[in-house]
Length: 242
Image (cartoon, rainbow, N blue to C red; front, side, top):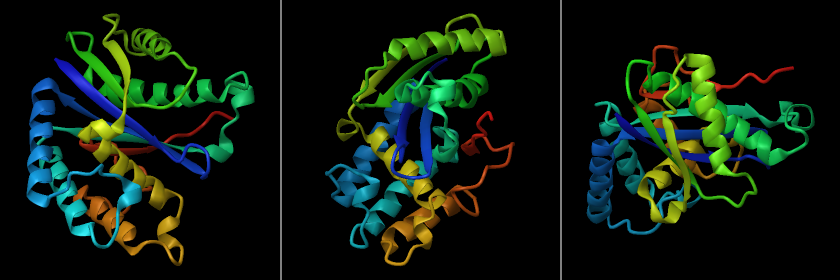
């Protein structure tokens, strides 16, 4: 099976909690998803970039409809979502990443991709492959390095020596609908986890959309760990080493 994994990150510097998350879907389901979003855009007349920071009361119905499209596919296992939450106050780049913040950042990507995607969707008996698409960001870190260490990790941790991560490449979210919905969902998780939904003056539309996403996922909120048995939509509050 060939899988596509689309990932994005939110609040990696200014807030306490950073969120890194992504979708996984097969080649066939990827094409269906793009067709579904094209239909959504035509129906709702929403042709601009879809983004968490652009959620307003005026556009809230359209964004809710967008989320409904996603969960219609999520609930039939056409697309899954997994994310990791990191407490920035506990991150010690000096101790664990030789003082290199970029290296430390991609170590968290490693944890997400290895455990939430590699472990869940690959086994020693299958010839599964992953093509990973990351939202473009300016960095000196070489993505091929991430691919190499992921494949080493799959071999060491899960006895899978087939090098299942075949490609990791950047893509600008303005040109990709899957990365845009990733931005909305990851934005809503970071919004609740960092307590913005509790602040006076916070945009009401964002509160309502975050609660709507949680209800569609069958969760009480978007900041707590999801039950272990969940496989379609998971939230993992990562525990850092002391």
